[in-house]
Image (cartoon, rainbow, N blue to C red; front, side):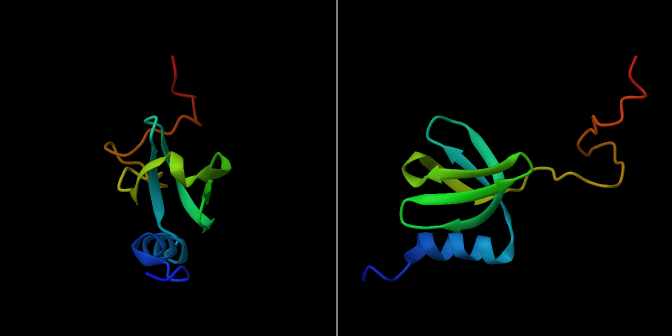
Length: 91
């Protein structure tokens, strides 16, 4: 394969970036990062999330996939994630 062809890795990352998909990145030490891929190159990946932006070395990544976990929802559902911003109901 020629150097300038992105291959499967580049195709996957570029599709996730262009489509604005939320991805889950698992590092080799077990840490899970969730966010949106802003850009990437041969060695690094730039991830943007609600906690800020991070540059991640690709050699520290174990797995990348579309995040299928619960998203923050604007409506209230019993099965959805809890909202800890309004604590008026706390004891």
